[in-house]
Image (tube, helix red, strand yellow):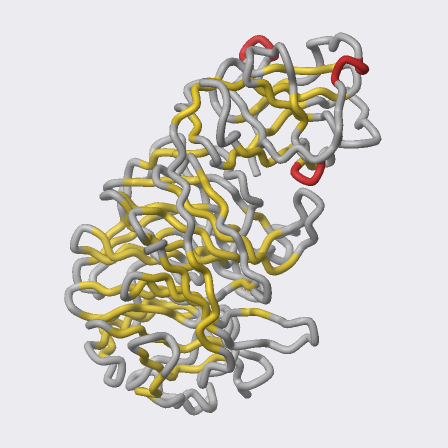
Amino acid sequence: MVRRSLAPTALAWLVLAACIKEPFDPQKLGPPVFVKVALLTPEPDEQPWERESDHAVLWHAPDVPLPPSALGAVSLSLDDGATWAPVSIGQVDLRKSRARVRVPATGGTHLRVRVRLGDYAADSGAIPIAPSRKKRYSFTRIGADLPFGARDGMGGLVFNGRMYGIGGWNPILYKFNSVNDVWSSADGVRWTLVKPNTFQDPATFDQATDWSGRHWGGYAVHDGKMFLVGGDPVTVLQRDVWSSTDGVRWKNVTQETAYPLRVLHVTFAFNDRLWVVGGQTLHGTDKPEVFGDVWSSRDGATWERSTAPQPPRWGERGMIGGNAVFRGRMWLISGGIYEQEGYRPERTEYDDVWSTSDGTSWKRELIHTPFRPRYYHNVEVFDDRLWVLGGYGSGYVLGEEGNLSDVHYTSDGRNWYSLDIPPGFVGRHAATAWVHDGAIYWGSGNAVDATGKWIADMWKITPPP
């Protein structure tokens, strides 16, 4: 992630969370010295924060030794600094100079935040508090052992009142890992195979008559058809486009798009066009590349490149599942870049939020999300909110690297709320999500239970009655 250092005299507005579990007396610390610690986020022009919403706090303190405990490192005041309450140590990561905070549900009309490391500290300005937009959603399991089995990166579309699951990858179940079958359901529980897997051998498969097995491609509904746009990082990299009106018969729209070969791109249907944003090639190719470009097409066959985004730009990225079009804009939330042998030694993951109304001019809505950086997550629009579900991320705030089980939503891209996760839910990445019949259906993916077995279950998120 990118972090900007600000002078202590230009401190950004910040906040932290209410969960106070440890007794703490700030008077025992003595008066702080307000140097050597600078708050980095949020930015000075941040709008009011909503009650019960989560936010990120980041700071910069290169010459300050870390205290032995996170207790008291981040504190909140609702009375202009007269009293301070510490954020729970479970929400503070001293190693990464970062905390996740929650705006208190009651008290005060504005708040201040303090980051204190030993004798050194930095305080924010006063942050106005707005009413909460948190809702209580139901999150329940509706099916286990789905007939298509455990799958990583299966495409999900809703078309003509039905949910479609397209392709996917499982190195245990399938000889060539990726498949090209299609399943359909009206309720997320009962699934019908509408197109069998014909991808049995890449050496003999006829790509002119059928699309090859793949996962994590581009999927969108456009112009009265379902579209499949490229994809698959494990068999053969593709830049073909296919369409269908029933999931059974697929038409080859083009075998070679005008944009450079890539995978892990984000695909949108927006303003009567298909859009391809970002993506990358992988190790093993002659010249690995990562893309920060934007392409669009009216028919899926003829593609045009949009003018390069003007600074500030969202950068090169991919690995975002879903095509969130929200309030007349396309949205990019988090994402990442695979490591590339000889070029990029480590995998990159982001935690920012960007949107655009035309594919050309991009607006950064949030520099850092309160949830950890991630990729292979699902992004959906439901109940007039943007949603981020699961994914894969590195350790953050006492967490370990691996599959994520958290779910977050927002009404504006800046104020994020966390959904309570029910017992028994297994974290997952590269899962599949559908918004259908007044609910989010979320299932399968790379989800491993306590015995090490890949599972294929289905969960449903609905608003309160």
